[in-house]
Length: 153
Image 1 (tube, helix red, strand yellow):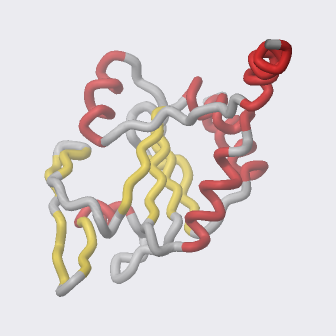
Image 2: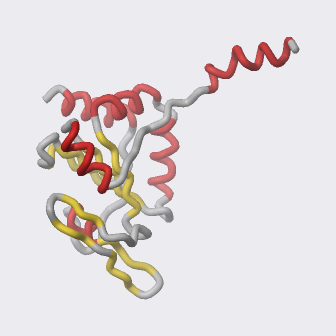
């Protein structure tokens, strides 16, 4: 019994903050209700840098709280997402290429139109205008600094 009580007391210590993410279709509805800046995190499942970055970011409670409070977050798997996506008044589809492919939206969002660099971070203001673009790994400290600047606008 004492062990069980001790366990219940320690459970909050093991709690990790959960990042709230949504989809592009959720985003349209949410922006109408409560406009906020938007973070689009574009990645692929084969990208080892993407996996390291996700692990590091998910351990940073301060970054997660900042994102959850002041931003909408969309995680976008650029090469596996096959459904049509409506974004900023346009519809984007998947472009198959043999056994793989890429989503048109990934190409539209990337400055490198031939092959996007992963991970890719895009931050739009509440009017959906680009305010920050970052290709490659982003450390939580840099992310927090940029997001604090953007949320203060």
